[in-house]
Image (cartoon, rainbow, N blue to C red; front, side, top):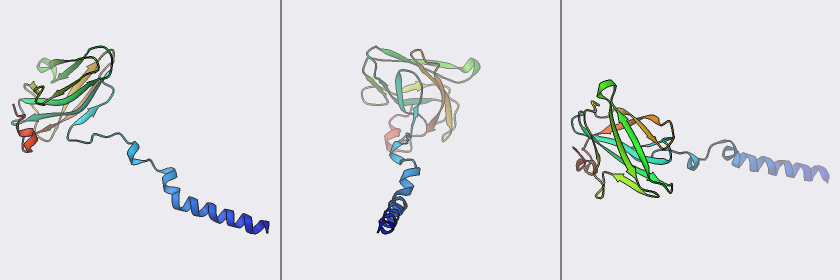
Length: 156
């Protein structure tokens, strides 16, 4: 009698493990962080969250920066952005109010003009993002054109 009980428990355990074994060892897709749009999210840029960043250009020479910058702190913060190299390096600053959002490229806020990006369509533009006391991060930002209707109005 005990051997039948042990055997039925062993078979039940094998059925449970066999039908759910993959879920035990694989990562849940809903737990993975990723950029869900055309732009990229900038990790570790400081107290500000920089989301869905992309550059829209027509000729690869001048463009505009589109992004959402979120300040979850109770103090106003400044996002420092740099692009270009050597003597062509350009710096921009964006002030974000406490517990506020600045959405570049919307009806409320124009996209940030970027001059002399020298990046071909479909490539990535290296840009440096820093806020607060963080060291900042260099990140590759996608360069897109205005062929999609919702980017056409943003062209410089």
